[in-house]
Image (cartoon, rainbow, N blue to C red; front, side, top):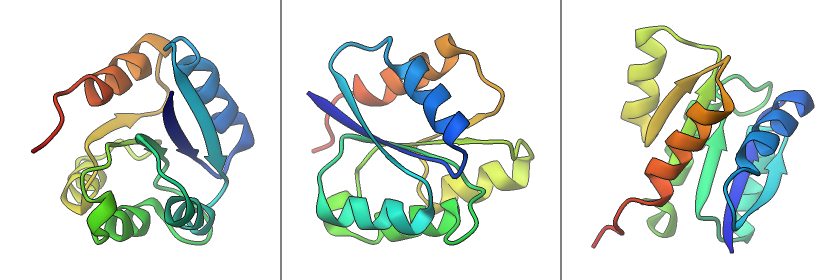
Length: 126
C-alpha cells in the first residue's frame, strides 16, 4: 500500500484532493490541517508522497518543504505542491525549496492523478 499525506488547512480541499486520488488503486491517505501537523506526521511515520498546500496559518508550505529536504530520510520524498499561488515567483520558490511538482488550484481530477502518477511511477533514485 502506498501512503500519501495530504496537507491543506481547508478540510474541503483535503477532502477534494483525497476524492480525486481515490482513482489511483493502492493509495492510502493520512491528512494534516497545518504545516506543524504535517511536520509531526512526517517525523513519526513513513510516507511515499506528500500533497502540500503553500498557504497555511502556522508553518507555511515553503517551511515544510525546507524541513523535509533537510532530513536525510525524507530528502527524496516526492512532494506535489497544490496551491492557489499561480505566480512564477511562488512556483520558483517552491521548486527551489524542494517541491517535486507544482500544480495550481483549481485542478481537474485527471490532472492531479497524472501529477501523482508521474511522481509515484518514476524510477527510484539510487
